Length: 565
Image 1 (tube, rainbow, N blue to C red):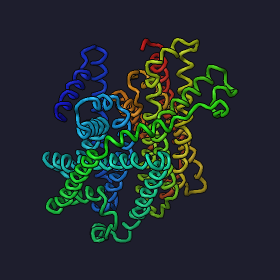
Image 2: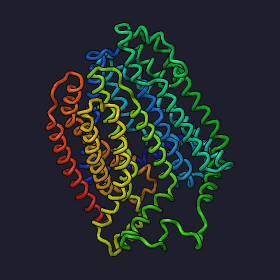
Image 3: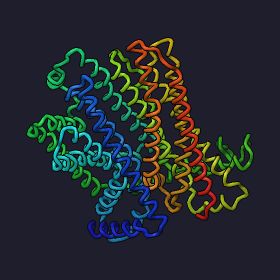
Image 4: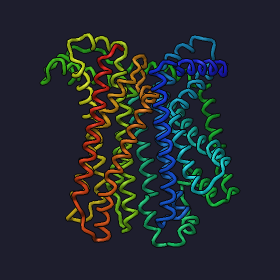
């Protein structure tokens, strides 16, 4: 039964994906070219980063793979949290599940079908990025093709699959506890647990502390770290993957096999436990989800007025007031929206607090400059992810009721502008907070202290403006008014294409600030005079590029509002 349903789902996907119309062909070709460019960029970055850290710095092979372990931990948590939220919509809110439950199909079959559907749907882009990063990393060491295939099939894919299995197990535990103590209490406890676990990990494996140890034990860096017990970290899956890659890079495949085998065995065990739990509890948890949904619906009380109540007076004109309140209630009523926002704000806050407390005692120009650029890129990546997740679906989520807005006496430009301002008000404070926190550790020289900070604040403003305008505009262009799930809307082909385009914009911004940032750190460590015009030129380039892309986003978005949907 499982393979029967899976086969026809695959046929349905291929029938709907293959469209011979000229517009669809051009769109598919553009998507392929952007994917190709992004894949090549991931390959180039991985290859260049590996060569730079191993040849131009004092980073040993083991320490480099320790950094890889940290990145894998971030990937594991991101996939895990993402699957918790996405799986809730897929397993408990999907109309397909409601349909299959009325048919002679076992609950376990329905669960397995939707689990794989969710995993492959949400992880396609990550597979492409992971493979190209692996290809760039392995090309530096001269790996043969079969070694790439083996690492991808038996290490990286099980690593991501294990994260997805644990996420769904956590989700089912949430549903079980929510029926007893309440959904909000369970989610608050889960956020606190994840926050504590992430903080504990980075506190015990501070990257700056590791870099400082290089000077103490150089050139015997690998010998020192190889005989240093990682403690509880050795029981984490990211450590197994990093150790496997480390031994493969040394040419010691024999010592790499146990880590790969252990990871594969744990993944199989986790999936077996997941299927067993689903067989006993999935249907009951689905019933609990109905109770949770009904409990969150409050009875209308005429005596109680919400601060967004339509009966309350507003300082805005009536049309703008209605749009703002409609967007607010549409956002709050969808649990996956505010839960995901809280998760991303917590992760953003944790990142900002962690980087703002970094003490860069290691006075090495290349390391500090690379650290700054990595944090800048990561901050831009988080802003891009927020815009994609919450701004891109804003127009498509209007659904079939969009005719009500279109037929109202409201200008389409005003509708787009209100949505843009709401998205901008959400993204800008987060982007500025990240920019300020990530610049604090690098304000060392009193005479230059404000320069890097104000440059980061200025860049964060233009990045927020561009990300919101671009995602909202192309979100309207690629809008699917039949899709009611905001997470799936933000994971569609159009969303992926938009996300990759914003990453290309992020690369352009990093390229623009590379020269002034390099000059800034040369001033700190080599006592050269800083030409402040370099920051001015970079700022003008970023402002011009951002204005141009924002105008394109506005133009496309306004036209998408006006077209017949």
